[in-house]
Length: 478
Image (cartoon, rainbow, N blue to C red; front, side, top):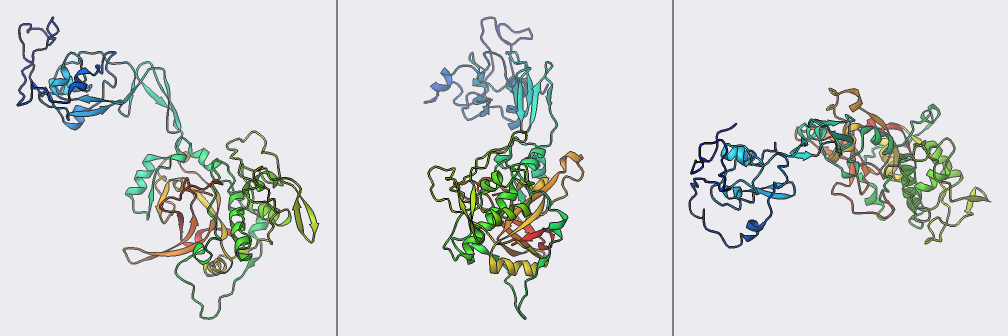
């Protein structure tokens, strides 16, 4: 027990170990200076407040006064700390009949046992939880056992606070943060629900590449952003939520921009990912994943309506149940054109035009050719391998970090994601090196993928930056 910060003196009832008189009076030598006995104006609320420990001391092991090294003489209303939704004090005035002392005041400041019994339970991160209760700590379920043991599941969480600290303390060129949309999800759920592109088949990977010829002496700019060249024709991303449908969202996003650009702005639809998720069912799995080549085939042969006509249903995490039925059908009109045969699922929208695209093509891995394709024809689609740290991305130029290499295997997960690339850039580092990156727009609500039909304001860093242009997975489709 630490030495007391104040001296408790015996009086008429001294001699025992208890320091309360039978009459309930506590005799203390108050070595306070001025103001010890005088009541200041405005203190009546504290004097009339109910005691904090009438039913026992909550958080009996909490370090309040000790943590701040705070023990105040007399009455000092600013000698206070937050305590489980209330305020506790570390001054001698707190130790009156109706006590509002902090739990460790008696032990730390006076060197005596507290006069109230502790409430039985489990202490966790400065709080006491009742016995036999069940609680959630991020993605893990925890229980308070009979003897005060706090036991939790050991699932790796998508938001890993230790990893955030390790990334931000390292020199990795980007910043990590806690995205509230991911709090409470396991890493396995993040890989399963927030991505959703199946690796291309060998036939797709072996597609003939389209070569873009650079003119002799042609020099591409160090930085380019499609929205600056084609203002009002590059659409904000939509949020796939917890639907593993990046295959549909990224395809619809690239096609929307290309239709707008090549129609010279006469058609500016935001194409419907839900139309692809529900109606493109050949070897596709809706919100459980899909293939890019199948999505582009459907866009060319069947076409889709706008997102206003057929909005995202928000169906999430339903792996066992069937996908929502297709609510938009079309018929051939001749010469490859199609016409809708159903009304818009959104009853407030009447325009059910079917939009189709020309065949997709694969770009080579030459960064100059990709850059010229993007600058001449608009955004392209790319695959990337997503690792556990990408879900924590908050700003900077992202590259996969080694912070999880020393941890168990379940903390190291990855999956395939598809994104829309809208530009590129370069950043000069303090050591003189130049770092090149691709630019992909950020969804409004999180940090990963395309968002809601009713857009919300973009975060301060509205783009994801990918280093080393040659490391994006193929194929890149235009």
